[in-house]
Image 1 (cartoon, rainbow, N blue to C red):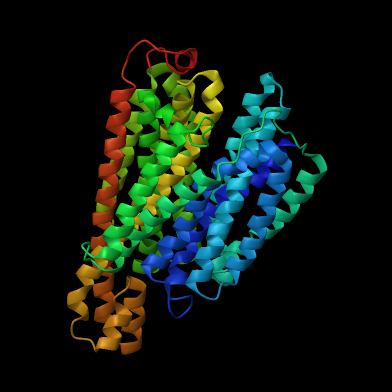
Image 2 (image 1 turned 45 degrees about the vertical axis):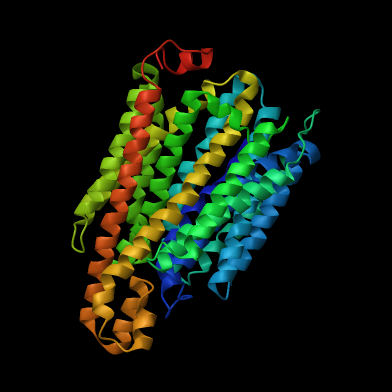
Length: 501
């Protein structure tokens, strides 16, 4: 049974990384959809948005109708959405399909964990959860490699078709060997909370992404949805605070360590998602690498995360969570700053080395922090805390792709503008959205100097974006160091993780 659940979970993690390899091809107006940076941000962000906001509803539905039932529904939705995404005729279709895939993923994650918790005895449960969690490392490593092979040999939509055999095998296995546990006391669905959280995040992300399409942040199309999103999210928090059975319990954030740990994780995933977004354009677009070579270049980072996760857990037991995870986040920030040394001719060995060291630091930051923020809660609140933790990380990803992607797009448009000034208006408009569009126009007009200007403008934009990610990561690291500084632990779980926090 556990192998079936692990096999199904790999799907979620493959899809978080595999699309990145295809972004360059999707953005190309000659070989893809000619998607703008904003459309690409939504293609990535819609997955994380629906994933984050539907987690609680999926868990409540599993309690009511059986977790296997919701898991099967999630796999089915994921498979159907993958077919839609593979043959999407335009960027809008791709965005909608990706959002539906995020919904399917949200139905799969909490139900898998609930099935493990309900069916494994206490002495085997920790090992089962660890094995299930290890699927993330497998999926993150496989995603870029599979994506590279498929994009190089087929077309960009083939990266989604790899999901279909996994879905089919997982469905058969789930139906044959996985039980269908339910809670005796069922949680009430929270449709208002789902609506407010999804709407608020969507408005906020829309405003941030819209800012990248035009550098004028004073436009109402930018500030109105941003302010509206913040207002809706504030209302969501008030509604959940007053609810007797909230799906997202904001009262948990009264614990300073829980708050600091979750904010630090959000900062980390904010930077990771943004870096993956611009990293693919750097390797495939600016440097002209193949999709497979790009996937191989990202592999050391994925291996580093796997290594760092185990290393961080062991070190935190000995040296405390604050110094280990907080220090690791500072190293992640330094890794983002190391992106400033990347140029068009930087040796790939240096790129891979930075990725490997950063990956180790990411793993060392994630594993002990997740364990620590759950352990500071009472036993009867750990389930709710775990759900909040998963959601906050996904929200960090949504905001990372929205804000860092916007900084990348807006900076590029500003830096490429002088090189486009002498072009005819139609060519200037066609070349302005992104480096991929500029290179396409440069090829049509036989102007290699324009392609060179596009690469230089992109590198400047990438460096500014990486610096922003570094600042956020440094803030997360400092927050962890302060929140988990040495003091007497409040609960037994904290003592197990770290004698002095």
